[in-house]
Amino acid sequence: MLTTRGAVLLALRHGPSYGRELVRRVLADSDGRVRLAGGGSHAALQRLEGGRLLRSWTVVPGKRRGGRARRYYELTLRGIHQAEAALSGLAALLQSHGTQLSLDELERVRRRVELAAELSETALLLGPASSRRVAPGSRA
Image 1 (cartoon, rainbow, N blue to C red):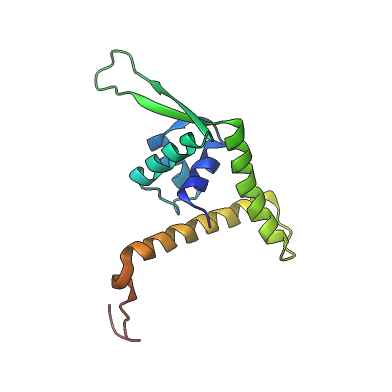
Image 2: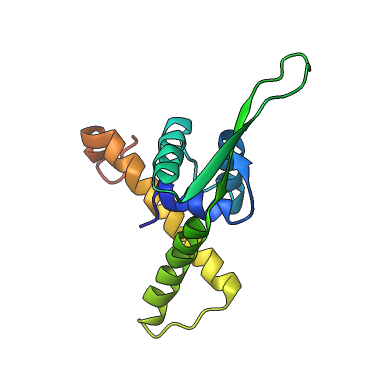
């Protein structure tokens, strides 16, 4: 299952970024199917940095009106290896079932896995409210 941690690692494979941009990058990379919550991505970034998978720095804008400091993140060498391991793990899982996929097909599968993870997380958050059943033919 792809976690927020995995999504952040994969998004940072494209280069350094700051928190809000990472959330947008994951959304774009998943064709709008995976939405990271700001708080969850921030906590994941802190844990990844603590695990030495990321390094960060703060950029303070000049005297522009309304500008605010941004904390940028990039993968360390260790982080790059973790991101590649996540992709390789998915590829190995698919190949173990006799499936040979092109890179484009593998990317589509990765996006579907991300969507499934997001849906699973949402269902867990909804809890008992999501178990309400609607009789066939009736309106919810």
